[in-house]
Length: 374
Image (cartoon, rainbow, N blue to C red; front, top):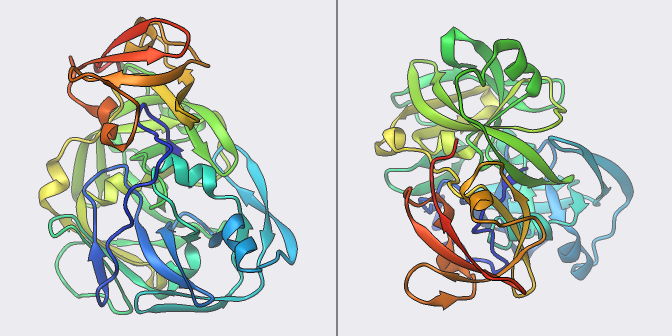
């Protein structure tokens, strides 16, 4: 799973997600909010991210240590730009609402960095094993997430979903100029689309587009990706426009595209991957503009502030004089300087022209004016 870091990646977690009532739970309405649900792991309450892009479920290393769960063997995790090592847990019973995953062997991995980047704490990632057993329904109109065993026959665009040799779930999409390609479906990614460098270069997908850049964090660490905006994306007969995309420096997958959670959150989405299908239909959110960073500033939580890890060329952050290594200790949005916290969530996605004063430790205050720089 990958998270794009922005000006608002904060050290503190949000309030816990609403508990599951029956088979459904409340959804937040933010594009960059992961799908976090309460679960039971070996009879112990925990919180888990739903991530169909994870070919194997994960349990946090600290949680495992507290529960006396020890790794039986080493395994390799594959990310967008590199690999990481993890331990193989013994069989564990995991329950998510009405869905029971008896005796699966998740991997043990340190999830703290990813959880902090996501601005919410969780102890597990539920991947392929859950999506083969459960039907997951995302309803952005009612702001509900539902888990169950049966799919509704309802209306909508029916798309075939296949499992690749890498055990990823994928479907066919159409990009601009009628370009049809396979795309991995990844609810763990809050980037609308990742494109491989090879695909971009072969088809000139940056032609005529302004570029940006950002830092992203995944299981393998931090990598710098190029940014652009795709004029069009089609899923069957359903169309989206002006979709932000990222191009990481390396690519580890057979499919050249990864579709993230923000795309599926624009539809009423029913994921029935165990039967090789998903159904999409329009929702009020379908025509909503995608969130995108207007600062060019990538940060990670660090002690008493936010540590700058990347500044995009020709971006508002670069024009403001910010550089990697700076520690932002206060932010003034026009109402007085305050220490960065969760009230600043989404700040870098605000309207062009928004002015922010950032105090960097040991240096002067920088004025950052948000703009559509790519």
